[in-house]
Length: 131
Length: 328
Image: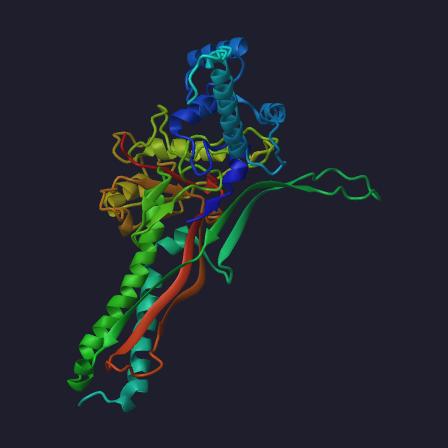
C-alpha cells in the first residue's frame, strides 16, 4: 500500500510521530477539544489535563516535548545545537532532550561534588628514617 | 500418446488459451476493479499528489487579462510496486502418460488463484479501513493509512492545504449519530446527506454523491429490499421509497463476507460516489498477470510455466468512499 509523506504530516501536526497515526481519542482531543498537538503528543487528552499542564508550564517553563517548532529552534540555539531548516521536528526534539539531560546531569554532578579538602603535607623531620 | 518435445509449442499455445480464457472470465467477475481505479504504470514508485481544484475563477472585465488560478496542493502518497508470481510444473510423467487434464487443471487453478487474490486484496482494503496496518492476502503486513496519515475510514480526515483547518468524515453514522450502524434506510439517508455537504479545503461546496451501495452476500436481500422497493420496505404505510433510483448500483461482493484473516465481516457495508470513486481507491499495474512458457526444457525434464505480475494498491483522497462495520 502507499506511504504518505510522514515528515510533512508530522510538521503539520497531522500525525503523532513519523509513521504513527493519531488514534480516535487523540483526534477528538485535537479537533473537538482544541488541545494543541504538542500537548496531545505528550499524552494530554482532556481539557482538565490541558489546563493543568499549561499552568505548570507557565510556572516551570515548557518542556521540549510540548514546544512548538519555533520554541524548539530557539531552545536549540540556546543550547548551542547546530540545526538546518531541514532538521525534522522529531530529530530536533530528540537532540534537545539529550542535550538538556546532559546539561542537567553535569550541573547535578557539579552540585554533588564534595569540596576538596586542602592537602595537608606532613613536614619531614630530620629524625625520620629513610625508606 | 505421449507429449513429446515436438509438442511443446502446441501445449504452450493450449495453456496460453486456458490462461487467457481464465483471465477474461476472472476480470469480468471481479468486483474490485469496479470499485478501484485500475491503471497501468511503468514506474516502480508512483507519486500521487492530491490537488483540490483551482481557486481564482473571477469575473473578468472585457479586455482585461485573465487572472492566473492557483491550485490547492494537498497531500501526497507514494505507491510502490510489489512483485507476485508462481509456477506450475509439467512433469515428464504428465507428458509421458498424456495427463493433459492435470496440466490443464494446473494452469486453470494458478490463473484463478492470481485473480482471486488480487480481488481479495481490493476487498481487504475496505474491510481493514478502520486500522492503520493489517496482514494482506499475500501474507505481508501492509500500512493502510491514506495520504493524511489516517486509516481509510475516519471521523476527522484532514487535508494538506496549509491554510485550511477543515476536517471531514467518511465513517457512516445514522441520524442518532451512532457510528458504524447496521445497513438500514436511515443510515443510508444520513450518509448521503453527510456526503452531499462536503466542502473542499477552501470551504467551497463540493458535494459527494453516494450512488453505489457495496454489500456482502449476507446483506444482499436487505440491500435490494431497501433500495429497489417502490414503497418503504418493512413499513405498514404506503409512502414511496425515495431511495429508489438514487442508488444507481448495488454491488454484491462475495469477498466482503470474510477478510483474509478469516474474520467475519458480513455486516460491513460501503457507499461510493461512482463518478469519482477512483480518486479514493487506486490500483496500479506495472505488469498485468501473464503466463510465460519456459525458454528451455530443464535438466529435471519439468517444463515450468510461470504466472507473474507487478501491482500495488493505494489510497487517495478518501471523501468518495464511505464505510460502516454494521456493528451498531
